[in-house]
Image 1 (cartoon, rainbow, N blue to C red):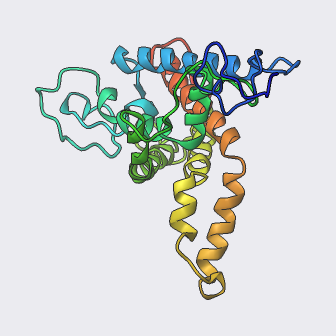
Image 2 (cartoon, rainbow, N blue to C red):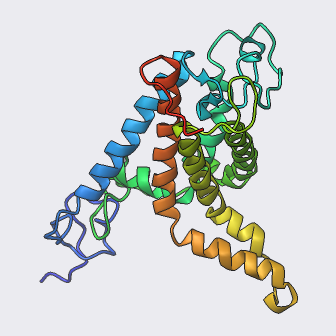
Length: 273
C-alpha cells in the first residue's frame, strides 16, 4: 500500500523519501515557463550588447556626452576625450578598452543583487524554474558553498555603485554644456542622460543593502526620526526593486547606444538650445 512517501525512481532534490511521491514535476496548467524564458532572453540580450560595447573601444564620446560604460575614464589613453572626472590610475601600459576597468563595479553590483539572483537562478539555472515547479538538480546547497557564497559581497559592491552613480550624475550635469564648455546646452541626449541617472539612483537606493544600512540595527524608530523617514522612502523604492532593476538596465544601455549613434555619425543630436 502506498503511503505517499516512497522514494521517487529519480530520487534526489524534491524527489526524496520525505516528499510526496508525485511523478509529475508540477501540476500547473498555465504557461509558467514564459517568465523565466523572457527573463533569460532579456538578460542574454544585455550581456551580448554590453560585451560588444565594452570591447569595441570606440564611439563612446561625443561632446558633451560620454557613454556610461566608459565613465570615469581611468586610463591615460582616453584622458583627453572627456572633461569629466578622469583619474589616470592606469598608465600607457593599459592597452585594452577602458570600459573593462569600470564595468566590473556596476556589473558586480547587479550580478549580486537580490533580484538579479532570482532572475538568473530561474532563467538560466532553473533553480527553481518557477514557483511550484521542481528544479532538475538533485542537490541544493543554496549560497553556502563556493562560488555562490561570494554573493555576500553585494553589500560592498553597493558602496562602489554609489561612486559610479555619483560619477554618472556628474556626467549628466556636463550634458548641459556644449562642446566649447559653455553652459546652456540642452539636447535630446541631455534628456536621455537625465532619465538614465534618475533610474540608476532609484535602482541603487532601492537595494536591500541600502535599506538595511538606512534603518538597520535600530531598536526604536521614534528616537531616530530622520533615519525612519529615510527608511520609509527606501522601503517604497524597495517595493519596486524588480521594475527599477529592469528599467535602469534598459536605460543605461539606451544611454550608451545613444552616445554610440552620435559619436559614429549615424545620428545628429537634436538640440533644444
